[in-house]
Amino acid sequence: MAESARRGRGGGGAARRAARSAVSFETAKYIERNIPNYEVLTEEALEVIEYNADTVLEEIGVNFPDNPEALALWRAAGAEVTGDRVRIPRGLARELCKTAPSQFTQHARNPARNVEIGGRNLVLAPVYGPPFVRDTAGGRRYATMDDFNKFVKLGYMSKWLHHSGGTVCEPTDVPVNKRHLDMLHAHMTLSDKPFMGSVTEPSRAQDSVDMCKILFGADFVDQNTVMTSLVNINSPLTFDDVMMGALKVFAENNQASIISPFIVGGAMAPVSVAGTLTQVLAEVMAGIAYSQLIRKGAPVIFGAFVTSIDMNSGAPTFGTPEAAHITYGAGQLARRMNLPFRSSGSFCGSKLPDAQAAYETANSLNMGLLSGVNFMLHACGWLEGGLVASFEKFVMDADQLGALHHLARGVQIDENAQAMDAIREVGPGGHYLGCAHTQANFKEAFWKSDLLDYKPFETWSDEGARDTQALAAARVEKLLGDYVQPEMDPDIRAALDAFVADRKAAEPDSFM
Image (cartoon, rainbow, N blue to C red; front, side):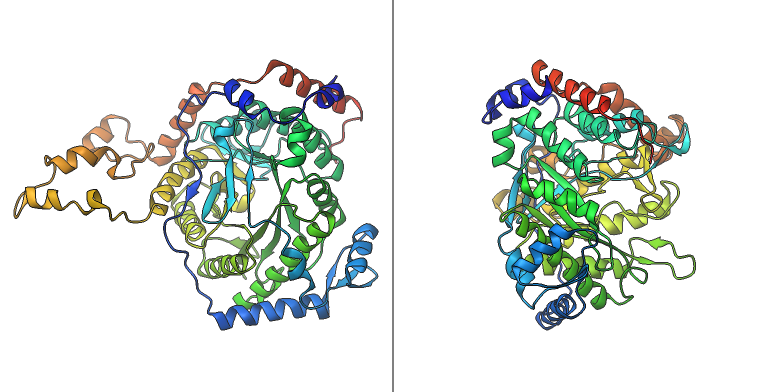
């Protein structure tokens, strides 16, 4: 049934999908920056790092273990291949990367939610990958499919989130070899925002593509990007066969991949900023070049998940000056390659959504905006170094994303913004609360949090003296209570259900 449904649907149904997926609440468009990027590297420094990255690829090389197909592609492209090691002649990787698009549209099933990735745009997506969840009622525990569904609903209801994300948490109560089906089904049916595909095994990447063909139509998927995936490099300088197999599936099918080193400085890369940036650039160039060997023009994103390490405990640290320097520098390198950039997020190492979490997250979010990030994964919900997805922190962070939107607008300088009439009206010693300009503009003049408390002490005390975590818990409950599932064509829903059921029945459960 699912197979026939895929064959029977063609592309071009965007208008019909839009009519069936009415926007039932306000959601913000992706950010279009009107502020400059913050740059820390001089032209000379950039040229040194670029030269050194080419030296790494040429002299040291990268490993593609257990992947004879990749080795054959590299050999045919002119690389020197010895065993699993690929040494790439100076300039070859950069030249191959030139066929990747500088910007692309990721289509959502509701066209009103489409996002533009690249240029001066910033797309925000939630936390990805934690095996644990935390809330005020149940504390820290292993994530379940019910938790996953709740996070997808919260993402759908969050005004400032543009993207539904991918593995918002790992539903550990579902078999490993089948949970990708349930997660994708949840993204497709519980939200109408864009989403990410599975990369944990090439066949699961293919399932992701096949489900998208049901949702969008096979022809539409072939000609448009409807899915993003996260392809992590096994730093240092290793491209494992599982991730490369998933990358191959997505590239062949014109779907986007974030090619991202996973680096903790001092452990998987040098302790210095320049050395880490050299390795980041070498790894990203090799990964993106490989994607273009698979399919010229396949959409990709220059990824950089980089943080530092606590040399006493070995734990990763977040929101640090070194991470900021690396993120700013990586943004400059990505722009010089004319590629979309992914980095940053609501990073913190704290075990609770407390002051440490707030400090580190604020630093991380702001450096993401200022560094020119185009796709910010982990933009809300991250806790405990990425081990935990927190319900309360999800809505706390999502609220702060509204401040990023307003900061990115920049400073307006039109006649209304100059406010000369207001200054003349009020004059010396007056106040602006009642003047015409204030009355005309006050509703939109300032960003207003939907979560934080600004009430007088007496009111706050009478209402229970709640701290931010308590306010966030109440907001989680309200958003889930207000949630209304977006409409979907019944035939598409039936075909998705049948596909998932068929694939689950085709193999025994495995929790390995």
